[in-house]
Amino acid sequence: MKILGIDPGITRCGLAVMGEEEQLILSLLIDTKDIEKEEFKIEKIFLAIEEVILKFPISMVICENIFFNKNIGSAIKTGEIIGIVKLLARRNNIPIKCITSQYAKKRILKNGRAKKKDIVEYVKGRFGIEKISRDAADAVIIALTGFPPSLITD
Image (cartoon, rainbow, N blue to C red; front, side, top):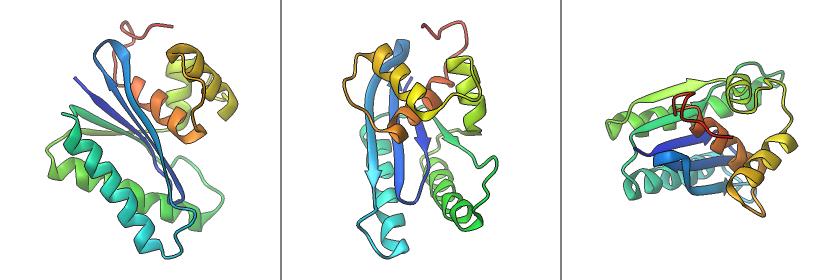
């Protein structure tokens, strides 16, 4: 079983692939800040996620959903990325689940209000990683929610 966790964003999109026994197989950041046109940003994200799905036999996709956002423009752009994630999952017959960041933080860190730095430190400590982006660390805890609570080790 391999779970793909996604922290969607138009400028910074985090991905993580978790394998059996919560093994971290891949964590990466898709960075599009240097790309001007939105359609090219979306294409880069689409192609990167598609490449991960084709490279690894993904059993489930778990994507962070928009819970609340004061910036409507940002929420719409994030929604577009969630849409391509759903499309890629559907086209590859992979079940998808969308969760809130609060759910992931509460489930994995036992604190629904954990800060980004807390998530990064948790992931670095748990997996022995020296450096990881905030968005990739978010994707890791999102993917971890796909494991039953009894299997998640601290």
